[in-house]
Image 1 (cartoon, one colour):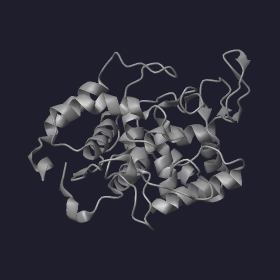
Image 2 (spheres, helix red, strand yellow):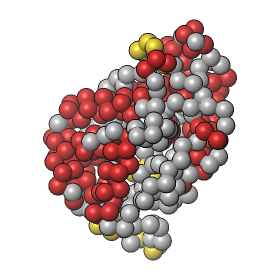
Image 3 (cartoon, rainbow, N blue to C red):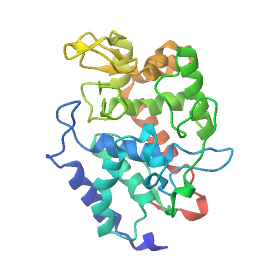
Length: 294
């Protein structure tokens, strides 16, 4: 296989250069790095997996094509793809599928997280005809989770539908949700606005602490004007936000116990987060096509 000849240490160096680019800016928070965006690219690529049909997942990099690249949940991710294009050109033996996942693994580590296991061997699919389809009752636009289904009960059920389809249980759903501690929402992408924490470029349990220790009310204004975006929550300062799918993690008793667990124990979160992200990134990759841990 072509990727057997790849020097992944050299690939990593190029990704770190992207992560360290001080010219990168984010309209929602100061001190931004591309790390959260690269993690989201890999997350949304792998998060299309369906264990029942064995379709979707991190193998194929079908987000390069329509209709997947234009799914609402993927708004803004073409930017992440473009950032990695020079790396792909420098290392043509690396598939887009492997590059997206490897870049996210590097980003997690560079943002202070535990090492996420990476196994090379993914291959790229040739066209949008390979984009995963999903006709489920709660997700009309692709296979990725929605931020709000209209009520806490429906939103909780939706999260379980989407994540159970991939093979994740309640604890894993909560652990994966810790990725929301990174980066921010943008009105020109999702319609939502703001970061979840005050450390949006550091992997930590701060997301869970904010959920439990802060006060969250429905957002009604933004920068002195009436808020016209979708339903979201804000803290008393208006600087931080939570989505309905975040708040439901403390409204649903089964989810909440894991929020409480991770809020108290950052080391436990770091360990579980790396493990479950590694599981996510392996979805859709046949064992016979994999080799080598990096």
